Figure 1: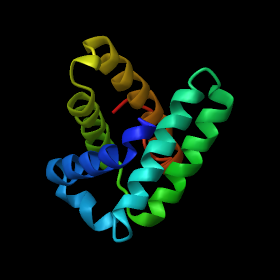
Figure 2: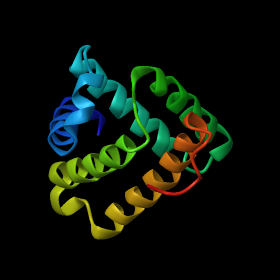
Figure 3: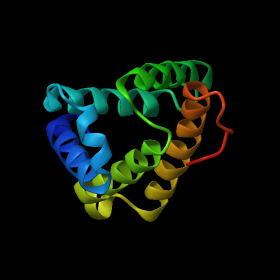
Length: 127
């Protein structure tokens, strides 16, 4: 995704804001910079899928930081849906049903861990 990082960010945020307008006010800064951070984060996730001792603490720390930005528990589901939709749109037939299922599974597990870290009163369930 690195070669098309600007497209990934643009499409992801367009999808996210359309699917969940409550997320738009969370992004007052440079949306292009946010898109690059998104692609970097996705790359980190892919690179560390088999290293949960590194991946999970980083994701949990990110989630705790996002609480101060105003991110809510329910917005995690919107982010996951926008991510999968964006990947499907960008990659077309190269994004197979198996790829979609894998991304949904990874995102579901990771977001559950993030929600549990950010909102300790929340049960640990997949989004």
